[in-house]
Amino acid sequence: MSGPVLVVVERRGRDPVRSSLEAIGAARNLAGGTGLVAVLLGSDLEPAARIVASLGASKVITVPDRRFDTFHAALWAGAVVSMAQELLVSTIVVAGTTNGRQLTGRLAARWGAAAVSGVTEIASTPEGVLVALRPIFSGRAIQEVRLEGPRRVVGLRPNAFPEPDASGPVGTVEEHPVPELGSTPALGQRIAFEGAAAGAGPDLAEATVIVSGGRGLKAPENFRLLEELAASLGGAVGASRAVTDSGWKPTSYQIGQTGRTVSPQLYIAVGISGAIQHLVGMISSRTIVAINSDPNAPIFKVADYGVVGDLFQIVPALTAEIRKVRGI
Amino acid sequence: MEILVLVKPVPDPETRLRPNAAGTGLDTEGVKWVLAGYDESAVEQALLLKEAIAGSHVRAVAFGPAPRTEEILRSALALGCDAATWAEASGEQALDPLLAAQALAQACSTGPVELVLVGKQALDDEAGLVGPAVAERLGIADYGPVVDLRWDVSAGQFTFARAIEGGLERMTAPAPMLVCLQQAWNDPRTAKLQNVLKARRTAIDRAPALSAPSAPEAAASSARISGFRLPPPRTGAKMIEYKTPQEAAEKLVRLLRDEAKTLP
Image (spheres, each protein chain N blue to C red):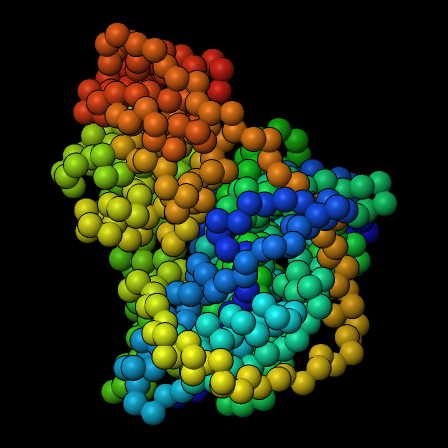
């Protein structure tokens, strides 16, 4: 691989998002001696830039402009491709956030690059070919894609790469004027943000632990048990389609074929029978635990650990045990 | 309003997956191809907008090989789309999302482009590259993953929300734009038999053949699918034996901490 590797870093508030740090980690391995450049777009970039510089980026470029504070794929792609051309970059790595997924295809088309998305493993051959693995068919198959050619865009899957540590030299931080954006289409505007309640824990897409509930919870107020379990693990709460269809939880909680696809380190399915509709949304989780009163529930076929029993007794006991072990 | 909806034939979600002889892709022998997942939501969203906006017209556009691509366009027609455009490709070409985007953008730009709808990703390859790449080629803005898309007649603009980490980002945007849909706000409808029969007789427009690739497209085609395999089968859960809920909890926590090593 000839040119440096560029990582697009996203922030929430003033901090880089965790998926972007994972992208730095993945890109560090790919860059080798060719250099790793991180790009930040928006206003008040300095604090995040300092963090990224300490994690292995040889150079952090900040492009301060308020126009980038709202994510517009067209605008971001224009800026990133301009930077990539100026720096003679070989590969752009994009985090698996919702913005990142929107950016990957647009960047590839604009830059005339080969692209792959949803990557869980990636390595470079001695000849400089990138070989990426990505789960497809909801984790029921694994695809291998080889990226040759001078320009490559690699989109990652969240939770697939470790965050880098702060050993190694600290990179430089440079401010860069807004690059030539080329023609920009008519853009919309953000009018409001309806955030989840404060203290609601991490978002499903980023959570390393997800506790998910199904019809077995019997009533919406019983989700309190799952919220306590999730809180003891620093995790998020999800739901099956039966639950969101009944209006117990908003559709944003739904995990499955018509909802969100998640891949946390630990997925705890509580009172979920395991219809294929649900399984396809969580099957690529690292470890799956099922708690269900029906020993024949299909969820036990895909789970790593199973507990047959009354969730109203098991879940509180589990929450208490985790609090004890974690000292909280 | 002219509404374009991009669709792709995918294997029925119940398909038993088998690698082909070369180990590079799905063995498509006997596979049933369907309109499904986010694409089905995209068609539903197109039809809801058509019903809400007087004088609008929905055209389904697809890229792929015969006969499956033609068949799913007929499924879209049977659901209520007014017209369909087919950009024919080989089975191998259909696997390349950026080539698909090039062909779909070309097929879209034969008429006026005001709103393009697409599922945020296909159920099979889950790439999510096509929508944003089509928008780039058409030179229009793209938004995703979008829910609750509406047309505000008085303001002459779209309102919608992006389902992003931590909440919903409410936005307004003018036409033209491309939207990658998270899922339909309502359950997708099913086709009525009389419409299925009518769709069989509807003419499907053919998109002009792809122009020869320019240099950037040749670079893009340097992504090559080199492997397709099934993950090791899950052998079924290790079931926890216990006498009291406390014992179950203790055993489970120990396994998560010491064996799975996924307890935070």
